[in-house]
Amino acid sequence: MERLKKQKSIAKIFAMYIATFCIVTILQIIIISFLFIMGLRSGVILPANYYEQIVEKNRNQIMVTDEVSEFIPEECNYVIYDLNGKMLSGNVSEENSLGIWKMIKNDRTNYGNKYYKIIPRDNEICAVGYKLTAQFSNSVLRKYFPNAESCEAFLFISTFILGVIILSKRFSKRVSKEMKVLKDVTENIQMENLCFKTEESNIIEINGVLLALDKMKSELNNSLNKQWKLEESRKDQIAALAHDIKTPLTIIKGNSELLRELNLNSDAMVFNENILNEVKNMEYYIKSLIEIMKSETEVMLKKENVNLKTFINEIIEQGILLIKYKKIKLTNEIKINTEIINVDSVSLKRAIINIITNAIDYCPVKGEILFSVASNNEYISFTIEDNGRGFTKEELDSATEQFYQGDKSRNSKNHYGMGLYITRNIIKKHDGNLILENSKEMGGAKVVIKLPL
Image 1 (tube, rainbow, N blue to C red):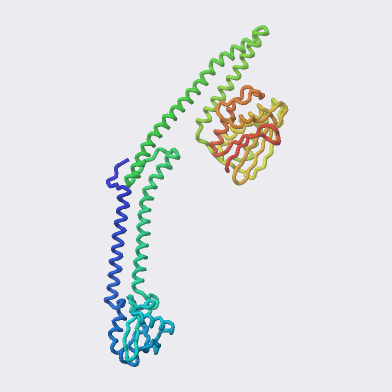
Image 2: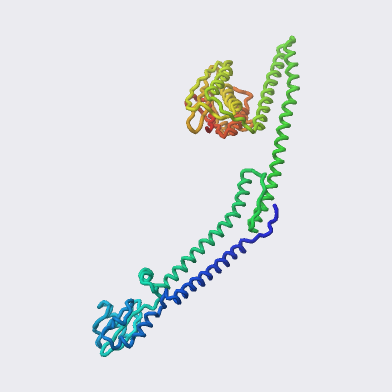
């Protein structure tokens, strides 16, 4: 990993965004205040005491004129009382006039949302009400926005919230971008994809985690390589040993077969036959061991489009050849709606034949095996059932394990579950499932291969 020139801590980045936010807020206040002042100076906005000044300017006329309304702005309220508080004229309701008179008697100057100037007249009192708020000079604007100061506050709050949203998104986007690098690294390690270059982050804390992950990745890669080499070495040694054992076994088998030709007494003949039988068993074990090594090393499948009917017929033909010596009945149930499947036909056929061979081994003489194939739009299943003893609970849990030896009381003396282990490896490589259970219909074992289409 190359060191970046500029890296910052999360605290510093956060402080920068806070400082930016404060600067933006101050600029908002300055700009909005400037616009408000310019509005006042240009006459677009009337000052808060605008109507108060007009009333004060017209005070003398209001004191003596009979047409008071001509000197009262339209936006103002007014009411004229006699000295006893009786309303003589005005543009307010009777209810409000009573409230305004109480205000006058209590020496107050405000009622509701307005302030009032009290102007004495000849044996009368005039109260003129006005709002002490800045307003727009334009009547249309004043109708929809009666308070210019509220508009100023609304504009500030709106731009303030907008600023918060923009800065929050920018901060979130920056942190998310840096976190994505971290996420990509962890996902690659999780998928055991260790051949990648770890990118760096501009954030010190995240970069520290990336450095630790990069170190862990390298150590994990070295560990997996060592493990892989040890595993390959183990497989090679086992395969070599299996082939080396073949030579002495061949010699033993050859000598025992030559002894058959001699005139041996009955005891010697029995001993010789025992030797030949055990040699045969050992040959089976070695063959199974080589098959296991082969199934583990053949990682890449050679998938191709295969005609399903032809594939099934080939399995049935081979199965018929295998069952002849035990006079077993092989029944087929084919229910498919698929013509072509994409599989490695060689390895898949090998897996299915392994299961059929197991069924033959455990099936009694003149027994029955059911081979059924079914498909739908999502998957295809190959099922093999027999009428033997079926699986024990232990076998259902462990029959697909390498070198697992089943119940010795069953008919096969040399069956170690290697066929099912090999089959499981092949099915896994096809992204399928191998299901072991006991058949309710046949009474024996039931093995299902389920492959996605």
